[in-house]
Amino acid sequence: MIPFADVPPLQLGPLTIQVFGLTVAVAVLVGLAMARRRFARFGLKPAVGEQMAMWLIVGGFLGAHLFAVLFYFPGEVARDPWLLLRVWEHISSFGGMIGGLVGAALYLWLRAPDLRQRWAYLDVAVFVFPFALAIGRVGCALVHDHPGRITDFPLAVSLETEPAQNLIAYAYAAAGQAEALPPPSVLLLLGFHDLGLYEVVYLAAFVLPVLVVLDRKPRPVGFFLCAFAVLYMPVRFGFDFLRVSDATYAGLTPAQWVAAAVLASVPFLWRRMRRGERADGPAITPERS
Image 1 (cartoon, rainbow, N blue to C red):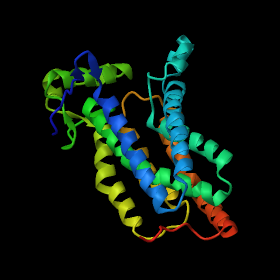
Image 2 (cartoon, rainbow, N blue to C red):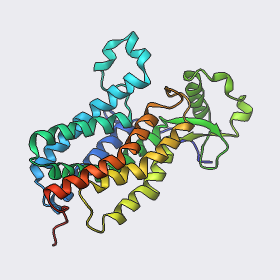
Image 3 (tube, helix red, strand yellow):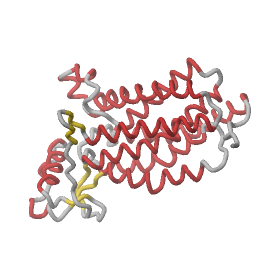
């Protein structure tokens, strides 16, 4: 099994830098750099693209917080409504995706003159997003903020150490399942599914290479929006069955409901984009150097 790594915050004089926050910052910077190159590659206006990116980032952070507190921690909101305004507490990656798309779509609705252009800008954002997500998930893996069920799976994170056992005990207690844990003498021989780590591995080993290969040829506008949904959503849906303490609705987590809805909408989105392309012109192709 994989040894449990307890990564402390970075201390730079009086400044304390959380590892997760650092990886998120790196993910944003890498995403912006990749997006600028793609805007230029496809002949899109860099100023429009960068402003869209700002709306996407702000919408993403707001959506990540609001989705998390409303669907994963509704009890906390009921006890403390001010939690809605404390955007630094509780975040959800699916909320970030939804909020980011809403922010970007709202900006493009105001600025992009035609439907095909809107899909083109969104496609850049969607292509870049998995690369940024993979970097962010490295932070999740380092701080183990998505612990799953105990297991003897070889790629699980070992529960041999006391910090690891304390982490999983807290996760099970938060889910009201503390009694389901075996005694420490048995627990130290097991591990836990680290869902952040699993997602890093899946993104890096499969999703990102497939996107790079698909990007070698000109693709219809909106292609990568559908491609990411097909590549990512089914596996993320499955991963959530390994969780311990997430809220569920009719047996599924909020993320699973969103993943299912996105997958169900892919045929509709594809037909809608193809109709828009036929009405507005051919697909946007890379400029030749």
